[in-house]
Image (cartoon, rainbow, N blue to C red; front, side):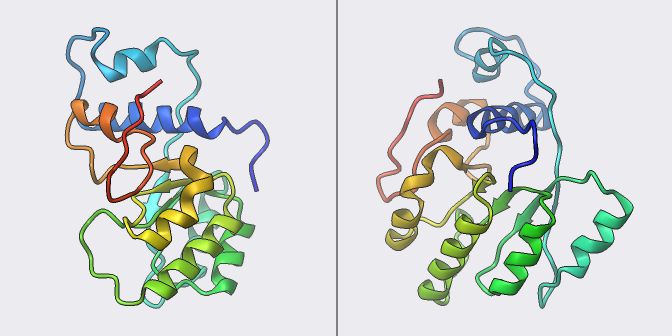
Length: 183
């Protein structure tokens, strides 16, 4: 469920990349070849920060409920492991506080059950239609799941410096890592 007045996904992707650049200390001279400089030509909008967290082991909605009780306007970036149940996904979605789902798919972690992972992706994509989808797994079945959601895909695991912003931004997960230029 999108909150009223929320920026469109591509704008949030650009804001996230700009924030990542600032967080990593990319404050040097700006020129046309510098991705943050190109971002600066867009209409400025407020930047929203999110709290990034996991939900424990085993995952529990209570972690979110406690934080949201103390900070009702909190926006979230959640790590989504394959063992999220349909009930937990539904409870999380009901908070309407999730801006980003981080799949941790670009860290080289072992995938124990691809079927369970694919099911979790299907459920997350349905429950969070406006969330950014960060670091998805580079698996054939997952790539198929994400084909209709390419504009929401975001990476941070692959970003190590400003030069990486232009090559990882808005690319679809695939074995070829097809590249799309930053707008």
